Length: 285
Ligand SMILES: C[S@@+](CC[C@H](N)C(=O)[O-])C[C@H]1O[C@@H](n2cnc3c(N)ncnc32)[C@H](O)[C@@H]1O
Image (cartoon, rainbow, N blue to C red; front, side, top):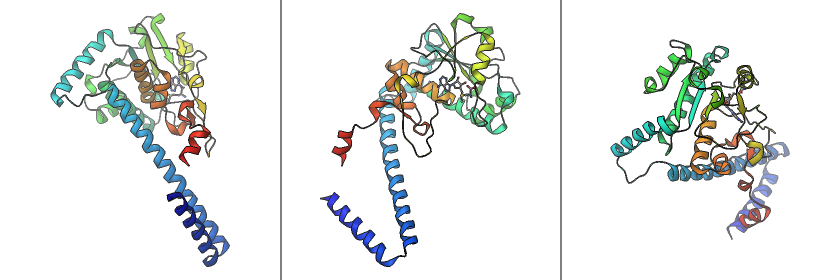
């Protein structure tokens, strides 16, 4: 009934436009209406995704029956436990010289989100920031932006000074090999880079230079390209986004779930189960 009414209204509306407006203006009004409808549909789908994301976070994360104080104690205990048994992740901050001040600031924000996400995790990682020069631009920006930054595990040493070569897996979107799982006895390295001035293959070249093993997220294996207006498709994510995918994979052991929850919508890829089938679309109509 509601459909019939809105269809009838739409017919009346376009008939009225034809009577009262010249052709050019009719076209503009119709275009604006189409844009508005598109925005509305995008908002609706974003709300749905957010809801699903929150549900997943609730399942993995905080327990509402605990008070703030108890939650804090649990978090502290989990983080301490992660230092001995958690999977290890380093952000390699040796490449910050090639970044603009704006990129440095964005990286500091991404590191803050990564640490925040780790604090909320049921099974946190043991995190390291390597080759972070004290008094460098990033250090100063992190001090300014990130509460508790001095409690982070920071070192001026390279990850290879801390871990044996055979333990290291450098994650880079340009690797040929795919990351199949996350092992507790490996250490995963993320390149501390922000891609505004798109410096291609920087982390891949660095890993090659150091002769360390590389791997990429299994995007091709679990996702498909999604049509979009700009025909934009990118598999390059921010460090905190990669971290959220790894963390959720560790909790669920499912790449489908991890990618579905955290792969950013605007990157033009989607997990096939998230695409409604033609029959689902018909049901919604
Ligand atoms: C913004 S990306 C940097 C991309 C940059 N052009 C480069 O040289 O790799 C920051 C870091 O996130 C990680 N990363 C981003 N997307 C990834 C993917 N699809 N697979 C594996 N690692 C990824 C890598 O460690 C990368 O260095």
